[in-house]
Length: 234
Image (tube, helix red, strand yellow):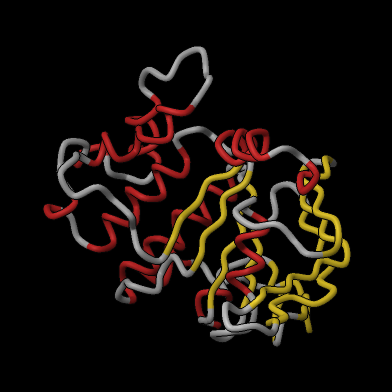
């Protein structure tokens, strides 16, 4: 599903000079995989996530999504691919405070060209066990519940790929396990999921771990026995 070939990313500083964020990154992720990209702050993991999500373009290399070289597409087509094929979950929930959970979840549908969107928001909230919080505002929800609303928002367009950037970074352990349990259930249902994290314990719930240091992939290993977040939570 994802093919990165020799991806490099260089940023130019406002004061001059350059920063090499990624160097010759090659990575393949098959449809239905559950992958963690693990690295410390400044390792390049967020830059890699931005490229995977079509939020940034590589300076060098090729990025194929579903066999298509998306880096060569016009910006409007990249935006369409982003809306239709990719769902995003971030460390900060980015929920609109004055709107309900359902209204927050339905926001991406405003830009959708689907023939029918009726019921998709409620279905996404049901998928994250929040059917009883449809009309609650973010201030009426716990941190873990807010992140679950954010996951539902990422799912509402039924994307092929779910990208999560430090999705448990603002959560206590119990809420973090709830979120990882949802990811595991979504993956079992066939969703391709990539989680960027600095937390090895979170990464151990995934089926594969790619480790990034100084902008390079230095290890890529399968997890022999991924932890069950649901069992840990119990």
